[in-house]
Each structure stands twice: as structure tokens, then as C-alpha cells.
Length: 368
Ligand code: ADE
Image (tube, rainbow, N blue to C red; front, top):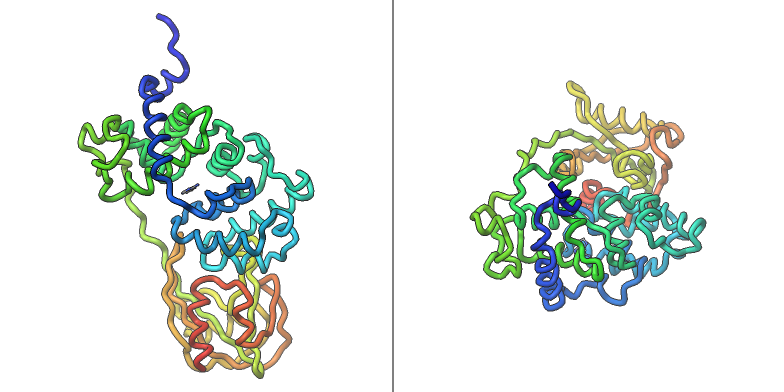
């Protein structure tokens, strides 16, 4: 028997590839949203936007992207900035390792690549924070290389278009999806094609209530033919997130408040916070505050009234945070279990980047 082409072995759907490509490119040219990173595109702007767009909705990213590009318009400006300034521009966007890596990568690009983002898949992969998805996005959108991309939107479009009912979180299905994305990507217009796939997923082929009557690929879609568009992609049952009880001290010494910088490699690394941590079972709230402040900064405090209780959900866990007003008693504050400490006025708190749950304490401090 004659050997089948690699592409047809991979998906057996080659005949549909050109029509899917043409229909999607035409649809995208008529329907693409006018997003800030689509204007006067530079590789740097593509890179920044694609990092911000990981796990984050377009509407959330827009104001962050605009502020970031105004403050750091070039890779050199970003490389020269302090990490604190970069993280302040990331505050509230979440997944802060993205901001830290972007900054680290900017320095590397200036020192080792003459300030130019590399334009090949092989080189892009070596840059901190640029994984398989971002490599494909930058290579295709900024440099017109026929590299595939696979994000949540593309996964949904592919699973429905080709009725893939494996779990996309599992390696075998993921491999199949990457191969499909690779087979489909348009060789002349890879960037537009990849963006078209993402745009279709965001605007039409949505997780709930997909707009099939409006879909340019409705006649090509296997899931639509079989009436399975609502059940694909298959979803894993969400595990309940772990919950932690956190205590923090808003420690005053005169008119200044003690803040500390989280360790670089910790979750939310590089952000500032009020000293605190997990309450142990059986421990009173006030004892836990005094212990955590001492462990983190070496000082002893008198724990006063509770300022507020904050509930917050992060990507991998939930917290209930109890913030207590504290007064400095004795000792010299040192960064014992953190990277730095500072005594700041309430007015200056806003200059530092804090995690979302800590930001919710600010109004209580301003109303004291
Ligand atoms: N999500 C990720 N990249 C995107 C892009 N370039 N345009 C719109 N949404 C996106």
C-alpha cells in the first residue's frame, strides 16, 4: 500500500485545509477587532501583548497594555526599569511571573541580541517566559513564520471543528491538537490565520452558547454536523481549590507602616505585602499575627483591633485574610523571610505593587 503523506496520517483532513484557511482569513479581515496591539505592530508590542494575553481576557489586558507601552515603549526602556516599576504596571493582572520574566527577557535581549527580539522559533524558545504558545504567536504574528499556536480559544475551535473528544489537558490529545494547528496554519499569512482562530474562539465559537449560525466555518464543522458543539471540548471536573486562613499585621511605628517584599521565587514573588502568613490550627488570630510578623521581620508588635476580613480567589487556591492593626513594640526590622522591608507612609503605599488581597486592605488604612 502506498505510504500516506505525513499530514494525512496526522489528521486525514487535508482536503478541508485550504477551504478552512480561505474562509477564516476572509472572515478575519472583515471582522477583526481593532485592538491596541494590532496597530503599528512591532515585534516588541506583539511580545508584550501575547504575554499579557496568556490566561487573561482581552478586555482586561487593554488598559494594562496601553499603560505598559506608554511607560516602557521600547525593549531598552523595559530593560533599564526597576523590577518594582515593572511589577507596579502589572499590579492586578495576576500571574506575576509573566511580568518578572518579561523584564528578565528584556535585559537578555538588550545584552545578547542587540535589542532585537529573535525572529526564529528556535531562538524565541530560549527566551525566559516564552513557551510553545508564545513562540508560535510571536513567530507568526511578528515575523510571518508558519508556526502553530494553541491556546484555550484555538483548542475549543479545533475540538469542535474536528469533533475531537479527547481531554485537551491530556498529553495525547494535546499532541493531536498541536499537529492539527500545525497542519492548518497558513504558510503565506500565518499571523493572520492564527489570530483568526483565536478571534473566532473569542467572538463566535464561545465556551457557552456558541454562535453557530454566525460562524464562517459552520458548514465545515464536524461538531455542528453532529450537534455536539455544546459538549466539546470535554471538560475535566474542576477540583475544589484549597482554602487558607491568612493573618497579616498593618504595623505602625509613628506615622509609618511596615511592608515587606516577597521572595523572588515565591508565589507573587517580587510583590510587596503586609507581613503575615498562614494561621496554624489551634492558634488564636492575634497570636498568629504576632508570630508571623516576628518570623518575617524580627520585630515584636502589640496586636490591636481587626481592620477587615478579605476573601480572595487566586488561580490555585482561595484565602480568607484577616488584617490586624499592630503597634511596633521592640526590635530592629530585618528581611528575615522576605527579600526587603520598608517603613512607608500610608500615602506612599500606592507606589508599591501589592497582591490583590492586600490592596483590598488599603481603604481601611485610609479611613483610620
Ligand atoms: N489572545 C491571545 N493573543 C491574541 C491576539 N493576538 N488577539 C486577540 N486575542 C488574543
